[in-house]
Length: 156
Image (cartoon, rainbow, N blue to C red):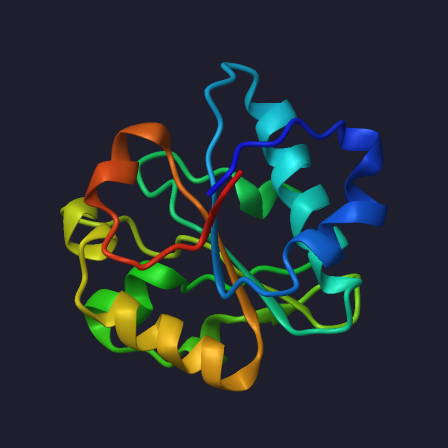
């Protein structure tokens, strides 16, 4: 993976092309400005969805959920419910303001977030997204990056 600087203003035009051959992209922010991080995550997801493929943005900031504040619609249940309590991903995913963009929030507070981040379900989910030609975008707090059990092919 080669690092590349990209101005936020150029995201809508360049991200669909840059992410065209990706299946799983991890978003993480070292900024202490949570509003900035939330807006940047949604900009990336919206830009990726404009590339004419299905995109699922998942909030894995399990200890302090963030992305639901900017969602058009978010379910009460989320990724924690899907991974720990076997709720269907289709049940917790919500369509957003851009065609083919879906969002899954955190849902129920995780008793142990590590169980979600390191779940053996991630590799299977990534394979399913690859088979469908879809893009899985995971918003992950920096401390959880080392625990995430998913074969990501991009980090923003």
